[in-house]
Amino acid sequence: MTGGRIVIIIAIKTHILQGAEMKTVQMTLDEDLVAAVDRAARKLRTTRSSFTRMALREALKRMADKSLERRHRKGYQAYPVEKGEFDIWEKEQQWGDE
Image 1 (spheres, one colour):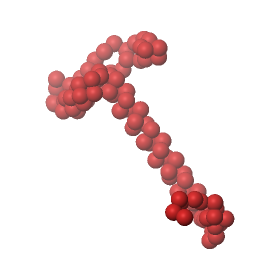
Image 2 (cartoon, helix red, strand yellow):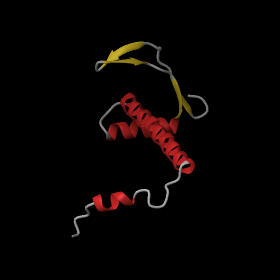
Image 3 (cartoon, one colour):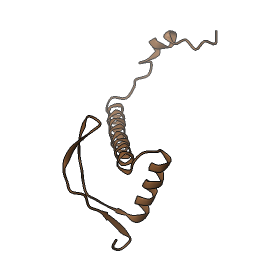
Image 4 (cartoon, helix red, strand yellow):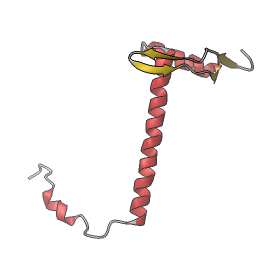
């Protein structure tokens, strides 16, 4: 441990886990982050690696969602909805209050 960081060093190799090819990587994390991840992993009854994979997938999904939202917003800025454009659909909607 140096300067409040834990360095996790594992030989980089490719292996098969649960039918998927996995690659072991080396990361440097703050000590408090490692502790928080370990607590969360224990709470979820999983491993540090599994929790980290899940967190990274979620972060990548959020990034992709934000990118799509930006593209969607740009599309509506470039081609704004015109007045009455969706009026035809009003009578198609059923709210169940009749």
